[in-house]
Image 1 (cartoon, rainbow, N blue to C red):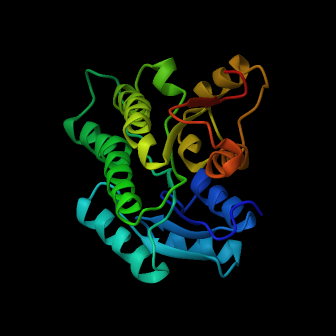
Image 2: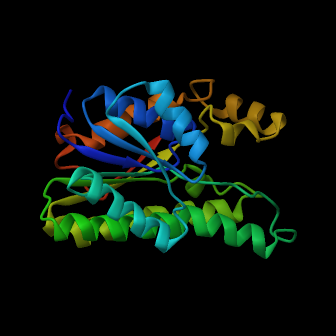
Amino acid sequence: MGLIGKLAIVTGAGSGIGRATCRLLARDGAKVIAADRNMKSAEQTVNEIACDNVIPLKLDVSSLASVSKSVTFSIEHFMQPPSIVINSAGITRDGYLLKLTEKDYDEVYEVNLKGTFLMTQQFARAMIEHQIRNGTIINLSSIVARMNNPGQANYAATKAGVISLSEIAAKEFGKFGIRVNAILPGFINTPMVDSVPEKIKTDILQRCPMGRLGRPEEIANVIAFLASEKSSYVNGAAIPVTGGL
């Protein structure tokens, strides 16, 4: 129960890693805003957790107006901004470079990198203005940022950008008592990985020393650690959680 009294916001809370993270943070005593651009999915997460400390919020991370409204909502509803921000929202639009459309590139950039930037900027600003110390921002990158798989130029580039953004934010926000870290999940059993062709999944399982996909809870456990005071000197880190891949 190391997060009692803390307020967290989790994007991409409607499924996968985001949903598992909401569950673990609530278990550890935090109040949680489960944010997703699909309100029904966010509400389903809240219903599954069945805890008064978790509330849903419709949020489009690619929109400055939407992100700003979420900051205002948290302050009006809880009298303070969150001190824990988890940027888990992400999408894929895979395709080989010569066939990749501008639309597919832009959509992935808007959510994965611009969305992480907007959430980091706006919520860090709110923490500073409300003099919240011991804030923590946790950004979800991907091991794909280092593996650079063919057919994922847009996704890999945005996730590599998330690492750089996190490292720079850690250096800029440290003086305000805000830590920023990135997690690089491997291939996790989520709806996003469900869309990966079976041939590729088989290849991944053969290359992974642990021989299996990860579970969302295994990423959420690392997020919960970074959200807690147990990680009080962890700042600017990019932590792979891949089963050794």
